[in-house]
Image (cartoon, rainbow over all chains, first blue to last red; front, top):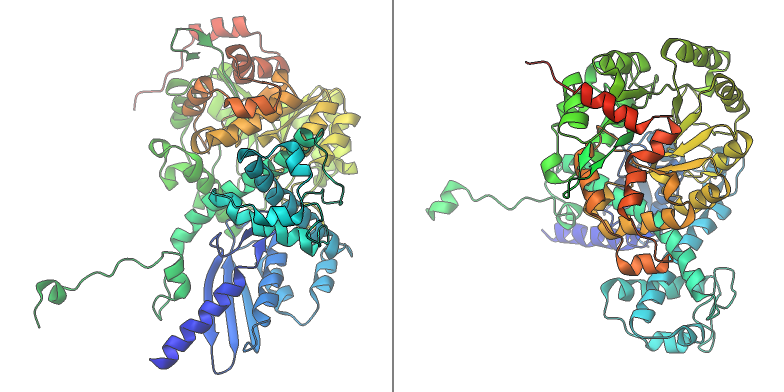
Length: 272
Length: 341
């Protein structure tokens, strides 16, 4: 019993660290998207297995590669983890993704092989920029809705921004995510730095704010298209997932895959 | 014919439909199964619940089904059938021009059947284009850039081999090039949904009309930019329109961008049958207005009745040289009927 509880705790730790892996095209955690199918933990050997599945067999393999490697990196960071096995299921490129992700070569090398030496970092940066834009738009529209004027917004410092609270769920969720990217890219560091700049670091201007927002909207429309389709397609595919022979795992419970317990005739009758 | 609540008759050209066979008997491998499964997932996720089909019917529907869904229960006057071969996945092809032509023989006045070719077939592709023109007198083709062909997992419209094919199309008067951009597999560094090849092809082939299905989504901004520069690039609404049911505000944002950038004359209705049936899509589009706040962000653009009429049929009629009043007369003289069972 004790070891069972411990195993569940370790699974929960793995789950938590997978929260930080995002689908690069959607900028949503793979756990929220329901892509993580199974987490297996062997506490004695320190081995972790993670199975994931994407909404369709045809999802772009570069996203699959990025997510697979990010899962491996995130899980490997847990201090008790010794070995990992990441498995992408039911995908047109699954064999090569799994071989690449679990092999001994560095990701950049594997990646380069499949794109004529193309640069992994530039691909990652492209996705990061989109994520930045998506998060920033939500926050900017939230500020406008709260009555902040264009001048307020372009003049807002990081310190003032930190003091703003949002009622809306999505704004509240994206605020720290926006701040995280802003700081990670070094676009704002000190409390008196402007909180809103472009991805290239230029300050926003009141006059151009509507045009700028229109550009952000364009990026969001693209991401929402994929996001809406992915969620829908994913929910259809996951109807096929069966609970394993060892009974439901943590992931099954989180994904709401465990049916309500059926009472046996004995229990129903209250006999015994 | 779609009749509005106040009795106005609207001429409908359904610019993107299919007559496919995705049944297990026709599948060559797991890819064929996964392909039709993916389509079915689109169907189940964006259709209103009362429009859902059983899987088996979806995989392979009958000639009677397509007539009924498009022209009897559905409002289409003319349907453009697209061909998609997917020879690596399906034994007899997914939807071939031969099978569609046979299907259409009962009511040829209702159908325009487009061909398809794979530029990677080289000389054979050129021969095939000649064959399609001579045998079926095609006016258009459907291009699927994510199609697998042996080692190749996709191609671009501006590949040299593709250009040789488009030169021939131009020469033979095959003017309408419908493009479905699927996700690119390789190279990994490439944006899987990139639409910039449309820009090159449209610039270099001014005589051809480039109809980009699902209006370039998920690269709507790039597509709008290209379609604004190029007078011969059009937006097909397939896949975008079904959002009108599940996410009407989102559809409003998409259509507002299209109206603002490329304008009312270059947007074409397509149901993407049998992924979705046309009836509910046309009805919902006719009743739809872009929410005011979304419209305000795009200079007040709105879907007026006049604009809807263009999108639903008049724009496509121009591209396919359909004389609308003559066609209406012809159709009213030959109503669609399904043989008694």
